[in-house]
Length: 360
Image (tube, rainbow, N blue to C red):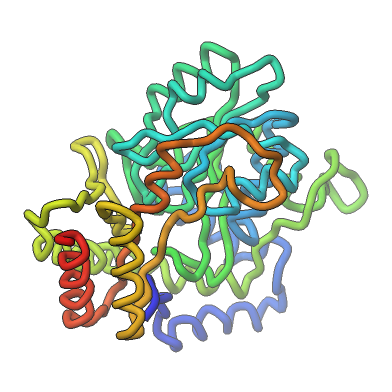
């Protein structure tokens, strides 16, 4: 059993949408299902402009290109590898700033400490669906005239101060990978508020096409197919139930592990309407993490060490300064299995092993 399980809508729901594809004969190139999906997501996520993309990594690359990030870009060492690899693929130099010990998100003070004349932007991750210090990062960005991209791959449906979390920043991206709360099997999105930037993103995801023979600069093939949009539309009908089910599982874990010394859970603050995308637990040390991992593996249960190793240690990157908080937390954080329909005996087994490891 993995840390998550992909949600599958009823086959009849998916087939009903596919029948429309067979009727139009249009498999891709901004078909009616993609258009419908974008409209529904724009409303649900509370954003001004949303562009469906073939996956979250390409969405990041398009956002980086659209905002003209080049050279040094400040980013977090505590995120999924795509946050860093997208910068490298766009020929940017990731400059890492350490994370806050409590939120595990990039620390605004650390961001400011590594800004140089070569810095062109900030790429921050809302880790586990919890918001970064949006105010703090915003103040730093404004002070130095920098643009912000938020990697909001974990944030589908989450809100902060009553607004969709993808409204924040100059651009934000989401992932619609099969492991996410909402998915298209493969997919993603770029969201922006500025109309001129939106126009740039629209061209960039379609090779730069402005028409059949005219081009608006250089683009890439970032389009989402009708087949993937059909999956997204089918899954979307169940999103609220998925989040409610995940919430029940997360709260079950919290209750079972309440009062266990040596454990810390990240929990939403009063201004956050969380989506229960992940269940990270901070254990006392790496020995405890490895003990839980190994004992659960004997029962074919596989929690994940999100995020290990820290990204500044990726092979192929130039050596840089240590990130002591990220390095420590990468050895202590484990994400527990959470998905609709998870068996109670699994939750009980995982909670038991977590409590046992924390007590050592």
